[in-house]
Length: 193
Image (cartoon, rainbow, N blue to C red; front, top):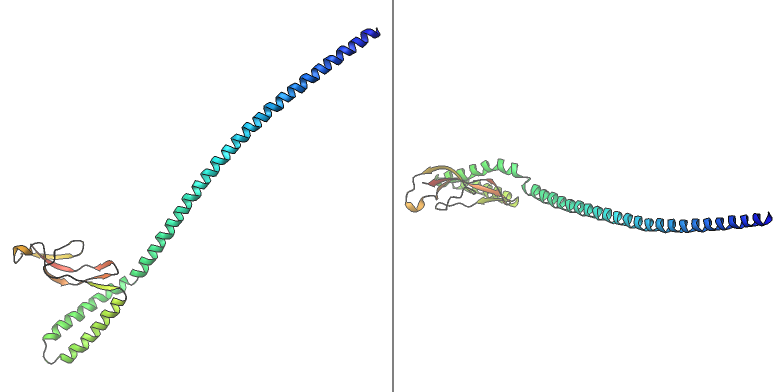
């Protein structure tokens, strides 16, 4: 009986060792598989992080470009605002300039008004210089110039005195003015038909 018991123990021991070896082999295979899975999942995570980083960089670059455009646009608008801030004041002063020109025209023909004409002319020149310093410029238009609808305002059309005056400016009724590069009042003209 003791032989049977010893044999039984040996068999049990062999089975135990065999089971233990199988367990160790199985756990080694599992750890290798899980390690491969971990390697594979680490690569997936790394790729995912790379793609997210690329997307965030793209968003940042777009946002940065938008901000730069915004800065340029607001700077340009600010410069335009400063250059045309006095536009309303200039528009209200233009009739005064026109009145001075009319007064000077009437005084040139009047007798005994030489001193008055000089005084009015001095005031007119001073006003013009002040307005020019603020950016106001008269638009030069002469009789015989070609009519341009973008630069002139046609008040009326009259029959042209000659064929070469058709479509050209015959008379200037009211001067035009620019403030900087912006036209604030178009010259009013009569064109030949």
